[in-house]
Length: 70
Image (tube, rainbow, N blue to C red; front, top):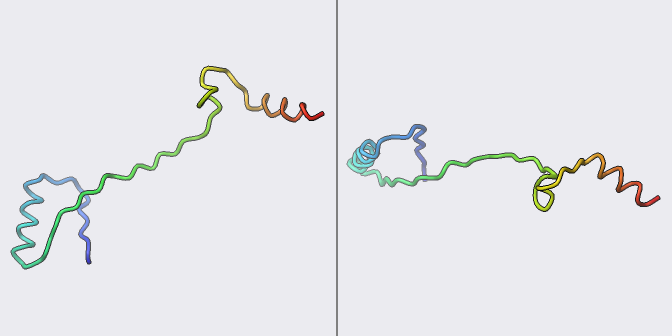
């Protein structure tokens, strides 16, 4: 199987014409569209989840965590 990648968004009429042209050359052609993949990086923050309504300093939390064992 071979794939043909169309990099630009084309009008549906142009895609239809391309499919008809390929089929006229006895090439079994079909259209498959994939949703674009979005790579969104997020950083973890103490403001997420249950802490979202509180002002929390990560350095202060670390310091207090280390001092509890002493």
